[in-house]
Each structure stands twice: as C-alpha cells, then as structure tokens.
Image (cartoon, rainbow, N blue to C red; front, side):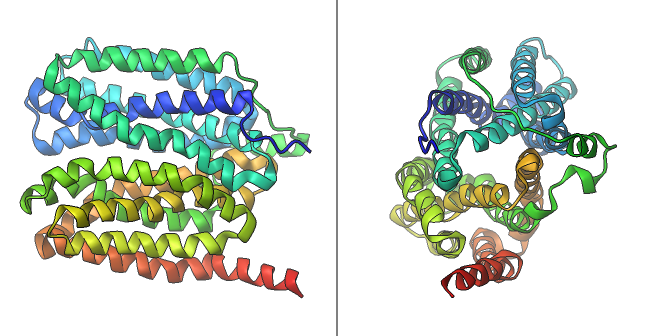
Length: 397
C-alpha cells in the first residue's frame, strides 16, 4: 500500500486551499472597516457584513456534505471555486450596504461548497495510517493564511485604496482555480443503495453523519470558546494597553501551529485520540486563563502559543477523528457535519461571549471560557474518550 503523503495531488490541493483561506482572512479582517468607511455602517451592521459570510458557509455545508458524492467531488470543487471567483468580482460595483450583505452571503456559500469538497477529497488522498498527520499538514495551509491574510489586509488599508484588496483576492482565487486544473480528485465508489440513500430529500437526519456528531459537538463548544479570542482580543488589548502584543498574537499562533502539527498529527496516528485530545483541551483552557491574568505582553504571546498547541491541535485532530469513525462513502457528510458545528460555534460564540462582557468584563469572560473548556473535557470523555480507552484496553488483552 502506498504510504506517500506529499503526492502531486496533495501538494496542489494544499496550495489551492491556502489561497482560498488567504482570501477569506484578508476579507474577514478588513470588511468591517470597509463597511464603516464606505457605507457609514454602525458597528453592529459592519460586524454583520463580515460575519454573514460564515452564515452563508454554514448554510451551504448543510447541502454540500449530502450531495458531494452524488454530484462528484471534482465538479463540486470546480463549481465552488468558480462561484467563489465570480462573487469576488461582484464586490467591485457594490454601492449599498444591503447589496454588500447579499454578496457576502453568496461568497460564504461558495466558500462552504469549495472548502467542503476539497476537505473531503484530501481525506481520500491521505493514506489511512497517516490520516491524523495528513489532516494536520493540510490544515496548516489555512493556518499559514491566518498569519499572512490579516497582515496583507491591514497593510493595504493603510497604504492604498480599498479596491486593491478585491483585486488581490481576485488574483488569489484565479490561482487556486488554475492549480486545481492539474489535480486528480479521488471520487467515492458507491453502491446503488448508498447512492439512493444520499439522493433522498433534505432532512437533518440524512444531511449529517451521526457517527461524526459526538466529536463535532465538542468542536462546536471549542468554536464558541475560540470566538472569544477572535472577536474580542483587540478590544481587550486596547482596554489593558496590550495592543502591540495582540498584533503579534496570531503570528505566534501560526508559528507554533506550523511547528507542532506534524508531531501532533503523527502522535494521533500512533498513540491514539486521547493522547492528543486531553492535553490539547487542557492547553486551550490554560491559554484562556493566561488572557484572564495577562498584565504584560509576554503573557499574551504565551497565550497565543498555548492557543495553537491547544485549539489549533484540537481542530485538526477532531476533523481526523470525525472522518475516521464514519463510513468511507459518507466522508463528505462527516466533513460537512464537523464544519457545520465549527461554523455554528464560531457564529453563535460572539453573541454569547458579548453578553458576558458587560457582566464580568473582558478578564472575567476569558476566565469563564477557561472553565467552560475544562468542563468540555468531561463531556469529551463521555461522548468519545471512554470508548477509545475501552477499545485500546481490549486490544491489549
């Protein structure tokens, strides 16, 4: 059996995903400012202009996961990326805020389709025995974009006109399409019975993979906790005079994630799920506790490192677990189920954490989230951890 990980097709989809993710992060970090300056939007409406993208992605994942194996992975990737490109072109003529919201929603839909199809395809490109390692490497393409994208977006907004962001994102999108033209996409082999089951009318029951739901629920909870960092880190840093450290937070996050993912992915394959998940959740809780305690830049940057080793490790490991526990012909549904929960947590998180801040302040919010993650470890034990432990014990005896 071929155990090679870095094949031509894996490298191509890695690069394509990087440019898609780069477009996502460039726009996510600048659209709020664009809405305020261009359309005099309120902060809440400007925030919606940014976050409605995630709502669109969540909406499309409900359908993409179900029909990806029916329509075909290759077609879904190409049509998703083409719609992704066409939607970027629609940003140029927009002159009204409500039109911008529609464009952002459609852009999110296209992102959900393309990202879901590429994630499903890459799971079949990776050798089964190296799935944790392969998932970690593939996720690193998006991780790199988390550091580069915001930097590019903020640099352009400070040094040139905003339309240059749309020009650059158009170029990124074209590059991703060109690369995928040279990629061989593995398709699922379905029996007639399996095909007919996937063609059934839409319902949550046949649009989600039930075996992926337990670990995806934990991902939903971690998405809520992580949203407290993504959404409010800058405001928190401004209040406590830690803005310089906050600006470097995601660079530290990306560096530590890129350095650690090959090791943690391999550890997942060799030592099992619990050996990675329990430490990851503990480190994520510790990172939130450090933000609660931070009075110096070093503490904030240390929190960034622990967030990478905690949340960053968990997200790639949990995705590998969701796919591993699901039937092979339902990998698309498993991937969709996982990202629906991630997007759902990231979408509802800012609302919940935003309600906490007036009551307990920023520091109290991060302390609450730290405890929240610790409690989630207990839930993980019951929905997945104890089953893994019992299987390992059975193999020993």
